[in-house]
Length: 215
Image 1 (tube, rainbow, N blue to C red):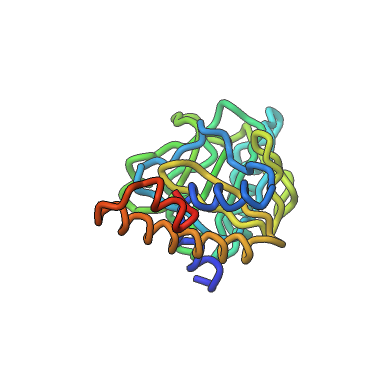
Image 2 (cartoon, rainbow, N blue to C red):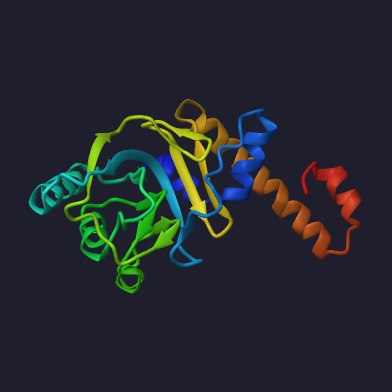
């Protein structure tokens, strides 16, 4: 992991949201329908974007050729975020997840479907999706852009942005402010720890909030 990725992985989505709110930044939270395949899955790292579209004219061979081309392009140390512009097919499966994990990709988030869920859980590759289905991309879908801005919900995601995802949800951090956001989050976590210790020691919650400025 890079330094920022490692630091971000020690944070959680709620504190990142709080910090961005306090900085006056837009609430860059992905739609709540996009969830991790397992509650314990966590994702953190810089974003590599993929956008694609359904294509009824593409052959089975060409669709798989283009899909495996995407798998070859996904860079190690990044989280792939996919806007498939599709609500029918699975845009991730077991062989693809195995490939990405083996290549050092940190996770995969899709505004769409996933299949082979039990296999993906077994290998421990973090995947977040909005639904599951056995329908795949063969002869029906193709990539159209890599590492370009995409939109999911009302959030614009740009190459180089960072992402954090956990059981609460998924937040996008703008690349130019990522380090500042993480630094502020680390400070806020330290304050929360002091509040927690005070509460456990019997301190009045309002007094603890006034003393540490966090609750």
